[in-house]
Length: 526
Image 1 (cartoon, rainbow, N blue to C red):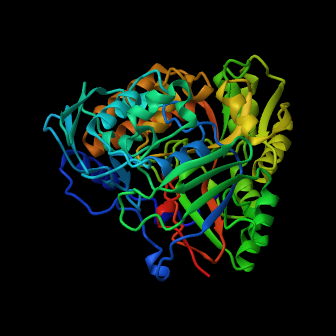
Image 2 (cartoon, rainbow, N blue to C red):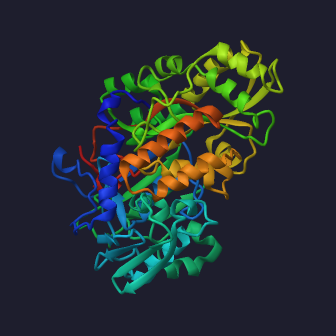
């Protein structure tokens, strides 16, 4: 989890956003593949066959994008389902996936997508335009976990057997970015209706892999989709995701050969892993560490209290000692690789005197006790919390830390049964609309289970959605970030990468900023 060499990913927001808006208003010609990175060919001739064992820090909850809220479920769904468009390897635009081309009306109120011919689901049945319409109608449902991503989309219709049209109530700048996310996954209508309420356990998609077995709490096994539309892919016969919550245990699995890939690599073990000869894969700019605060738990409903907590976070020490210099202090609630990121909006820094002064203006001027939840086995979160606790004690705030198994902690967060949780935000799209929508205007999740509500910020987010001019959107998001820093709804900590490690026998493993492992490109050599 790092943000070293930020300059590699941090570009002018206007330049990046111009690419996104240009992609929205112009037609995109057909491509022969999804545009996914194919590092495998650079490593030699891909070999078909074999099973990839991937040890992850947590289990999944569902295969239904409609209700998914955790990264592990999201990253698994990305292997099973395709979308109309995919995020490009560099994370700056979108490329064809199930749609080979698209066009947007000059007024921005309709968008037509032309479907790739001959695509089949993993059971051999053909993908139809009705499957696409059905899936996207569920995606835009405002009662779903991610309906807010598509709130300007008022309708989805089939113009003919190979063309889908989306109708918008207003111009919608991040449309393509939203359609590249897991939330816009396409699946079989007949399969969904067959399983009804159990559909989340029986996915059927057109992606490179299909579900073979899910043993909750233990493992998820995927098998090769022999009908996958990318010729010759995937190379692997099988992928087994094992649930290994303890950081050290995952590293030991990698070193012993029990696993070929692991996630959430502990920063303090990166050097040792490299010296052992294993690969480190770092995804930069799409994640920021933070502590979510439940405002239904007093005194977290007070901005002065939240800000006192935020100003007592020593981000530089966390970056240096917890992440071994692989991270940098966060300067915004938005991940640094996101469009319109601005680290010069009066960021919240480490300042105990200011924290104490803010607390003095609250209803708890002499301090209080805060219960903080972390995932057991997560050494980075534990070390970070210990640093924070020592500084908070200096202004009268005591931390009670509870370590819970990752899946249990996620469930408590999902149901708002917590006070504070040390976690991170991973952006599924290069556009900030997802994060801002989730944190402000998304009613089913109550602002990411924080219950934060600021009508002024929400209004600016809505306005930014409708603004197709990159410069104007940048100005709006600068205002939004400044207002966030006056409210402190989340204690952002450090810009972090997602760290993975793979054995030398693994080729083509290039996870992108969307969280897609790109396993269709992976093969196992000697």
